[in-house]
Length: 390
Image (cartoon, rainbow, N blue to C red; front, side, top):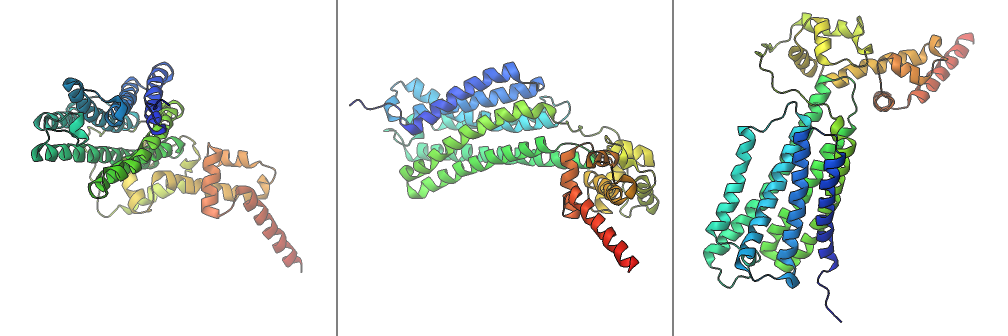
């Protein structure tokens, strides 16, 4: 019986390559993202696909190549695709969350990683055999440089993925500090996806470190799991790019105007203006209220408003406004005048523009749904009325 070229674990690499090629095509045809984000995500898929191909050629013993140039090109391919997928994932997350993102000198700094890995490959005369530590010409120096290259590549992916998680987390916090009504599904999924890549690449790093002590064969067995997770995450990222990425609200770049001086002790007048804006003016009733508009209404710079809400009220703008909306809804739910008003109408009247946000916040603050709250309060009023008659 003829020995198959690919085993089941190799097939996942073949599938990853095929899927990445298809995703590049679909991305170019279907994506609604801005051009720079589209290019970065496309480049990410290309890097993941080519990396799968390089790993297939590197570790499959039936696809052994003899050409010195191809062996060298394979080492370069593995190195550059790891660098490429790490940088492009990070920059993609930045591009879809930041207003007017452009390639500049800060982004060009990331290319230093390309120079470093190429320098290590050339210095250690690393080829595919050297990467697998089976070269007949390897020396103590080349083994050292090869280990250094592997360490660099494994740590690099984790650092960039962790940076992408940080950008996604900061983005979510910025939205909460600026807007009172928005869907956090997109930012939440973005953070989970980037966290998935961070954990996946951290696992790959752990397997690499483990291989130094338990041997390559056992480490390879653990490392195979990494290929399956990569396949799933790549598909999940593509689905995310179609469903959510184009809907994300981009945060503003750092302002060019001079920052207002924020006092250590907040002005009682400013605190009272913010409270009056909510309790008297009821600015929270506007569905699309953001912190800039709120600041104009109360006559304070929006950065000062943000600091006061964070420090004095110990919350963010998103939570601050929606807590008032929940209180308004609670009042309406127990008011006999609104006994025939539907919960949908009440949530709209109280400033919410999303049923999911209303139900999430209402349950968080009261521990029950709006319908249950209305029934409980009605029962309490009925019991009180009966007790009064007695």
